[in-house]
Amino acid sequence: MPLPLLFALFLAFGLESAGPFNPLTQAELGSRATAALGLVALVSLASMGLGLWVSTRVARTGHASNALRRGYSRSARILEISILVSFSVIIHEWQWPRVVRTALGAGPVAVVEEALILLPFVLMQLVSWWGLYPAEKILRSGFGVTRTAGRGRYVLLRARQTLGLVLPVLVVFSLGQDLVSRQWPELSASAWALPIEVCLMGVLVLVLSPLFIRLAWPTRPLPHGPLRERLEHQAQRLGFRCSDILIWDTGQAVVNACVTGSLPRFRYVLLSDALIDCLNDHEIAAVFGHEIGHIAHRHLLFFGFFFLGSLGVLALMGEAIDPPLLALSNVLGGQSHPVLGMIIQAATVLLTAGLYFLVVFGHVSRRFERQADVFGCRAVSCGQVECPPHLDLDRQPGRESSGSGLCPVGIRIFANALTNVATLNGMEFKTRSWRHGSIARRIAFLEGLEGKPEAVNRFQSDVSRLRVVVAVGLISAVLIALATGSVDHLR
Figure (spheres, rainbow, N blue to C red):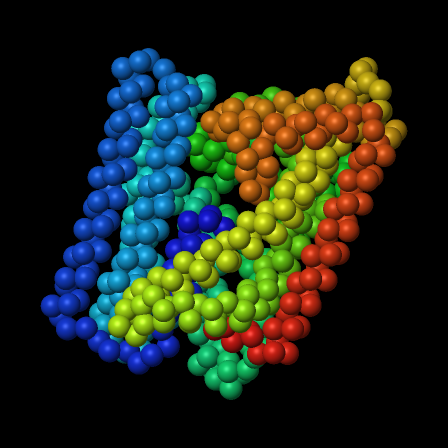
């Protein structure tokens, strides 16, 4: 899930007051709606100014310098943070949920109400993408991407990529919780209700996620030809099954790949259009092998388990920080400044949850990425520790690897694929990513495995131990939270 959307969901629904609802007057309703639209307009002007500044600088100098790219990247992040701050003001200072409930009246469907509460954030995202389009287009052209979508199609693609997959999932969860609360109110009040609902909805999402992707993202089957034959032979050789291999049409805006679906009958591998156009067949096969690695090591299932188990961790953390939060709010604001107390609570909870996911989930995710990287190298390796000569196993039907190790050529192919993907996406090689790590470190790690099968085995054992430790910790946290009633903090 995109982090800005995750924070927006927390701001919108994570700190709602359980007190009685008091409708607004028509004058208050109009003024707050106008103020919210004013903030959306300011975001639009800021993004258009940034996009125009970058495109004008490049047009004047004839090229985009690294300093300009870094400046644009920092400014875009500041704009993203400003959108979240503005949305927080709309939600808590101007009480947007109260505006929505006053406008809808009694008895609306929960999912409609929640969609309208989230609407200001969605609008600010859309206008920011619209304004930043000139900068994105001209900076990507510097990396050799000559075909780009028009502005309207670019915004639509960004919306489908960012929101199209997440919002259907939220609809499933919202409808599920609404159904339980209406049909089985006594079950909804139970301490076990939230974990059971999340677990059942999570299973449903895992099954339906491939359908969500087909609906949310523009895709088409990879046509028959040498590339498809290579990938299908590779999948068969590695024991991987999927429903189809799809081209992900992004208007040349994304150089990436992904896999979705834990069950073979509902599983797709997506390769973006720019990835297919800009990488050679061997590099595409290495990226395809990386995605197979996520399935072979059951990363998707473990991530689902991680987020479910994290409910217990967050509940215990909420139990621990509530008393000092209450004391701090009373000291700084007291009862006369409820907004200040709410801001303190929001900032502390958001920071605590953010640090947890940044440290724990980030570490697990980076280990899993490296494990998938190793699998990607293996997918294009001939199995011989010493090569060349290198055997291209996917161009010789019937030939199988005579070994299970990584060969130098296979490592080099995958490293080249990583380098090209980073370059085409405008990523700096040494820039760290909390989920994937830097490209430079990933490549250095793989090169350090060359000719060292014992190092590969040691790494795999370390990842297995990490999975066990995290699993035991998450299960323990859920059981303790249920036993102590701490799970009520998540309601």
